[in-house]
Length: 139
Image (cartoon, rainbow, N blue to C red; front, side, top):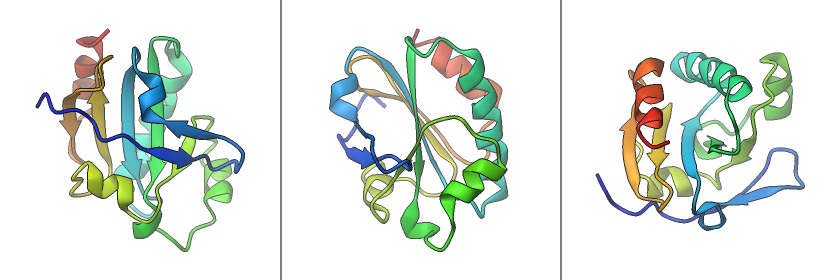
């Protein structure tokens, strides 16, 4: 599973920022694809919100990608507020980035090392402890 992660640039939900993967070389990246309608995505994002609040963000860049092509009719800003999320949310362009990572469902979490090689891929049934162990192995 040492393939190089596909590069992307995604706009932030706030409408002013964006993220480009290639600019994050040298950082470990936790990339999560989600939708608002999926119960597993909701559970996953709440667990990752707790991780986001408790970790050193200089060591790991967490990127949360809303798959707009699978969840287009939601008011994401309102949903983020209702969920009390402070983590950064970016918008996929339809399913372009989701497809580039060959995701088969949501949530999907991808762990990238500092060289942007894919080191872990976790699907909707993954346990948070397994994702944290994978992350710990990259730090």
